[in-house]
Structure formats: structure tokens, C-alpha cells
Image 1 (spheres, one colour):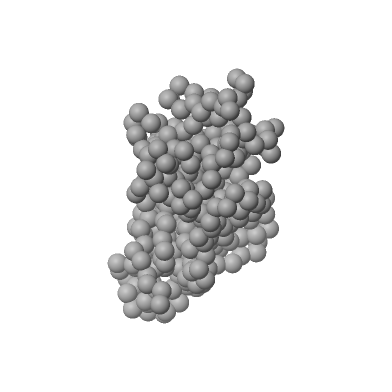
Image 2 (tube, rainbow, N blue to C red):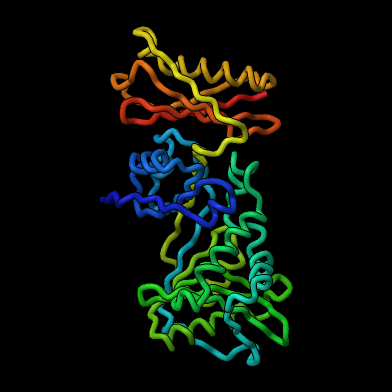
Length: 349
């Protein structure tokens, strides 16, 4: 039996500041869609990044029940290996230097991120709606600022970043985080010109020695399933996969607007209480056609709510977060009793 675990969205400060969107992250073993929906609305999130176990096969269905836009962003295979069981072997390069990031090598850290993660930093830029608001450079900047802050060893003694140096050339890097008597690493890589030369295996040898010297039991990390080269080498060296997580992006876009939002006070009559959907559709259509006359084809999706709770006067906010050459997105938000309503109006040329 699947037990529904607490569903909590944490505000992601650094990437929110850099990307200009209010972003939350939620990692849940089995999320509750009502809690998720409520927290997104009360938190006014523009984007929620949700990570759930792949075994939660109902995740897409539950997300669709919220009425919020949501898109699958990929899978991450998880590894957890008892490090003492892995043989070290001899280093391919006995003169490697593992140099710790001390806050003075910002350009080097940024270059390493670009050279290893530059083609797919987070994945917001590949998500519909977000792709017109976010690019890879901003994503890299947010990853850089996060690790620059939280993996600076002098401020966070359990965290570090190590650069791999050989013959005065930096060939790669990786982050290390000590957590619950285990070692975790979720970012790192070898620069393209130096791959398949043995540096990655030497990095793993260093990690084993680090774990043994710090009495750490397991090495935990993850890798995107589509990264076949990395998956192949992990399996080659015998790391044990323990499952996969699926990642979903929910671009609710509740606060972001590319132009000034429009507030409307709608007065309902006895005839319109039961036809609130029609009323909101008409208002959204009127606004879209007046502001953006080139968009003629329309569709509208709104969440279900109890019509018995509708007030006579409701304040509705129409915002315009995304406008492309082919599509216009309008976010409709209002208050009915103690429950927020939200809908998405799409207009097409």
C-alpha cells in the first residue's frame, strides 16, 4: 500500500532571484495533489519543480487533476553503493592534484559548469512556456551561485568542491556533501577533451579513499537516464542503481507577467452563478481580443470548485506571462470564499 507522505514546497531563493520567477522545489515520496495545489497557490509560485519516485505511476494523473500546466522533464537514476566494497585499484595518473574550491576560483568553477553541464543545466529552458522566459546561461548562473555559496568548505564544513588538475591543466571537478554518515555528489564531470582518458575512474578512486578516511558508509549520487555514457561507466565500475526519480515542471506563472495585469470585479447574478465558467471565458476572451487582436483561436481550462461558495462579487486577476509568435497564455486567478480559483486561457493565431 502506498502511503501519502507530507508534500512540502521549499522556496528556491537563488534561482528565483536569478531567473526572475518565484520558484519552489518539492521532493516527495508520494505527493498529495491537493496539498501541492494549495501550496502553489498560497505561495504564488511561478514554477514548481517536483521530483517523485518513478514508482509513483499515478503522478501524471494527479498533476492533471490540479488543472495546472505540468510537463515531464526527465528521469534521474539513483545510485547508492557501499563504498568499502568497491576496489580502489591504482590511479591512472599518480600525479593528479585535487584542489579544493576556496572562494577565489569563481571563473574556474563557472568554466567547469559550462564545460560539463552547459548543454542541460536544469532543464527549465526546455519546458513549454518557460522556454521563452529562461535560457541556459541563466540556469548555469543559478547553479553556479548555489554551489559557490553552499559548497564553500569554510562556511559549510561538510560540503566541498574539488577541481581535478593534471600537468597544470584542469580536466574536471566534482562536489561532495557529507550527509547522514554518507557521501553525496550531485554535480561534477570531466571536460570533453579529457573524457575516456581515465580521469573519471581516478575521481572515483579519490571518492572511495575520502569515504574510508571519513568513515562514510555509502556513496550516493544520481545521473540523468538519457546520459548513456555516464550510466554505462557507473555500471562498468559496479555501482548499484536503487531506482529512478521522475521530474515534473509545473509553470503556474502566478506572479510573473510580461505586461501589466488586469484586475476585474465581476458581479454575478442568479443566472451566472452556475455558469461561472462561461462568465470567465467571456471576460478572458474579451481581454485577449482587445489587447492582442491577432490571436483568434481560443481555449480555456479552469479548476473545479464548489459553486455554492461563490460570492456575488469576485475579484479576478488576468495576467499575461507568455506571448510567442503563435500563442498567448493568460493566467486567471480569483478568490471564491476561502478557495482560490485559477484557470488558463490560451489564444492562438
